[in-house]
Image (cartoon, rainbow, N blue to C red; front, side, top):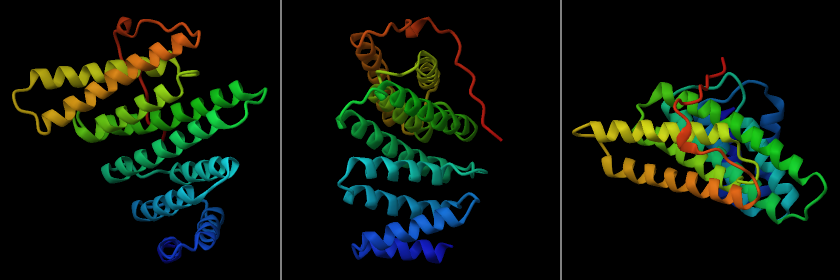
Length: 233
């Protein structure tokens, strides 16, 4: 399969995007098992190239869902390389979906579509976050990167963001801050603090924007415990 995916990769290099789309879709549709880390990296490259050359909103959203579904096939590989790489791809796909939804003509089911999309975002990042808590310590950069991506999506989906997710972000961010403040020497301390500041800003702006849209959000600082998220088997 790697050879076939390499053909799709080579097609993007030669700008034969129609061939790349055909190859990648045949691979995904003809197989039901999950992909290895190496296969996912090739898939990520091809889908990213397809997105960058798509000109129609409907096709952009379709490609994004295909990409997410390919990454999230079970059983997934829970290791640092797989989780770190896939979270960036999943974030980019949801970011693209959000922006396309916002600029497309609003239909009567717009709120329902946004709510359903946010449910998918929550499911995707709940899995990633559960994996991150197993793989990295609270202040490690890869773990904070997942919180950063999730917090950016909270801001982008502020019209439908849930208080439960905001509470997870707030409490997880506080855990990381506490660890940094109580440790004498922490590797990549500056980068970790910068990520925490980004998460704080995104949480604050998400809450503010949600309230401007007429949604009442509970005080994030009233939550005392992190909502428990478990990793699916």
